[in-house]
Image 1 (cartoon, rainbow, N blue to C red):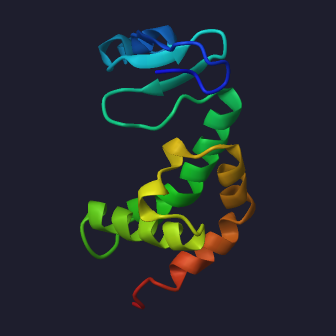
Image 2 (image 1 turned 90 degrees about the vertical axis):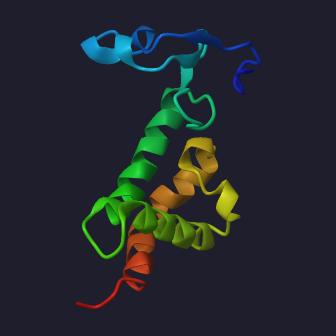
Length: 131
């Protein structure tokens, strides 16, 4: 894996190298890390692209907007609710469904969702069944 910030090859290292303050991190799957940029991404399943501190922060803010919408109790199974929210997000962001993975977004896409977060929450609410 090549770092998108500095074009250096990323190194596969234990998660404890990134999270030394979390004791159980040494039991987690390894991560790809670009040491010069402090960009990293997990490997236990495709989690996205290498991200520096700023992009990781933006992605976390995006997840804070999106994840509660499918994690809350509601009709259907959890993965069905997640797929439904991400389908709505795809349409809202004018992205192909396959491109609607926050872990692959760049700064501009993240910032767009952050700026329009409340609008997105209201948009999702239109699709919720009435109780």
